[in-house]
Image 1 (cartoon, rainbow, N blue to C red):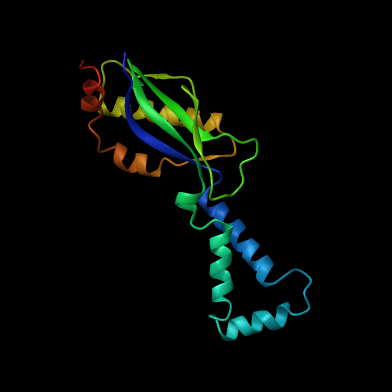
Image 2 (image 1 turned 180 degrees about the vertical axis):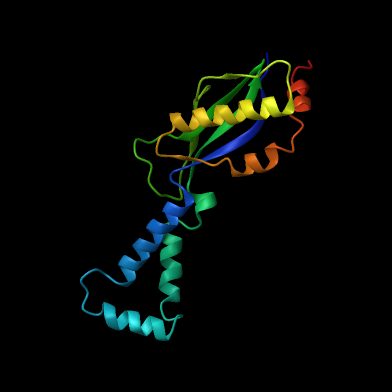
Length: 172
């Protein structure tokens, strides 16, 4: 029986808010090193001219890792139907410790990230959508400390004709 892939869910090293909070703390630490006797004067100079440190701040943002959405992805959950079940293959970086980096290779890791969820019979759009959501919730438990981004899935999921999508894969 062939799998019917229908959505790729990104997995991040950490949530967006935490990434930007840590990045801002890093930049502040470089621009105003802790214990420096010049910090007060440097802060006053930047307050008087907000563009004073713009070049160094821009450089530090870039070298820290750039924007979160596309540079902090460490894996994908590839959702698919197999028979009457929802499953997800996981592709991720194969490292012991995942740190911020711009160079990473995503590799196939497992054919089933979390236990499969059965699609309720008879199938309804709401029933299939809820089964996929339950599967993604189980995936979050399998990836502690990681951020499974379902924002786009949740946004479009309620508008998808799940019954047609599910039935499409049952045809030979």
